[in-house]
Structure formats: C-alpha cells, structure tokens
Amino acid sequence: MRPLLPLLLSCTLLAAGPAGRPIRALIIDGQNNHAWQETTPVLKSILGASGRFTVDVATSPPHGADMSKFQPKFADYDVVVSNYNGDAWSTQAKVDFVSFVRNGGGYVSYHAADNAFPDWKEYQEMIGVGGWGERTTQKSGPAIRYRNGRIALDLTPARCGSHGSRLPFLITMRDLSSPIATGLPTVWMHAPDELYDTLCGPAQNVGVVATAHSDPANKGTGEDEPMLMTLRYGKGRIFHTTLGHDVAAMQCVGFIATLQRGVEWAATGLVTQSVPADFPGADKPSVRK
Image (cartoon, rainbow, N blue to C red; front, top):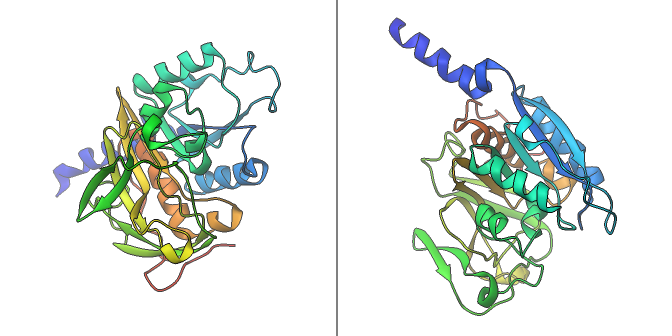
C-alpha cells in the first residue's frame, strides 16, 4: 500500500485548493426576497466549520440603487456561492462572471438564487432550471422531473416555481456516483423547508443528485422534484441546491453536509469530507442549533 501514499496525498492537496491552500469562496448577497442578512452568516459559518474554505462576502447595493460599481473580483476565487436574487448586474460584472465560470471557476446556486436573472441567458444555462420571475414552461423551457428512475423533461404548460407549506420531507439520493452523494444514506429526512417544484429552464447537462416527492396534500405536484443538481458550463462546475429557505432549515445536518460537499465539488471536482456522524436517517431530521 505504501506506493499509493503520494497519490492520496496529491488528491488531498488538490481538494484543499490549488497548491494545497484553502479553497477561496466568495458569497454574493445584498438583494433577495429572502432574509439574506440572516442566512449569509450561516452560509459563511457552515463553510468555515468544514476547515476547507476561506470565505469572503460581496454585498451589492440595495434594490434600485446604482449597480454599475458592483463588480466583484470573481477571478480571485475558486468558487462563488450566490445568495442573491435582485437587480440585474452591470454588463461588465456579467461578462466577468461568465468568463470566470466558463474558464473553470465553481458556482453554487443556493435556494432563491435560482429565482434570479430570468432574462440572462448564460446564467439560466448555468443553473439549468429556476422559478418565479414570470417564468413559464412555454417561455423558459421544460420543467425537470424524476420519473421511473430517470430524468424527464416536462413541457406541460405551467407557471414555473411553487412550493407548499414548510414541512419536513424525505430526500432521495439519485446519482450515487456523484462525489457529493458518496457515503450518504440513500434516503434521509430533511428539516422543515420549502420544497421547490416545477423549476424550468434550458434544462441542459443537468445531473440530478437528489429529489424529493412533492406531496399533493401540501399543494405539491405529485412529482419527484430535483433538490440537488450538478451542471457543467465550459470548464466550470455548478452545484445547484434548492434547500435552505431560512436559518431553521439550514440547521439540518443534511443541508450542512450537502452544502459543504457541493461547494467543494464545484471548486475542485472532488469531495474529501467524511459523512458526519449525526447525518439524518429516514425517520427524522438531525438538527444542529
């Protein structure tokens, strides 16, 4: 086994970031129809607790203000995590962001970030599917469902983006070959949260890592809806999580672990983190206050 040690060490260093340094993450916030002032500190804490990341935050001007000077230095980071849903970015910021991802930068769409920028073509291609913002399947593209063990694209005319009341729900891991899913229980209970349904968009090159059943008894679709997704855009990797509406939902160990794993994968293509001992099973959520 001794000859394998240099290879294993090399993989570990790569996962920590280029040249063995920590992974540099940037959280974008400043506008959202959700309480970003509360959730950004939790995102930062979750990533910091993993020991894999250094984390900075770029906060935009408020809604309706001049966005021309909001130009984060995306190229200084390995991965960008969006907690943003608001006014359009400047042309230069858009160009810089697309270049960052296309050339190998990682991107993570967290919860309502998939509500953002419905008219920005490149962004919609990155996240695959989104909701609200006057999206419809006729205008924006098909909804993604998971039927009979495979991804299905649903072009039934519909308004895209909905959810029922915040209740606990089961998550089913679908792509067990994904590094994000490795070692996790196939089925686990998520804490009360919004279960997004009927997300639609270009829906190209989407890997559905996990789904949840949208219960008609809770104003759902009766479909298995994507909760965790992976995509590629140029050389970049994208992790799309619909989970984590508020601080209470973010305290679920399932959310914490999949976020940490998804951000690491988006940045490096690898996941080096072990499965936490308190990861939930199928019977009840596991929560860290």
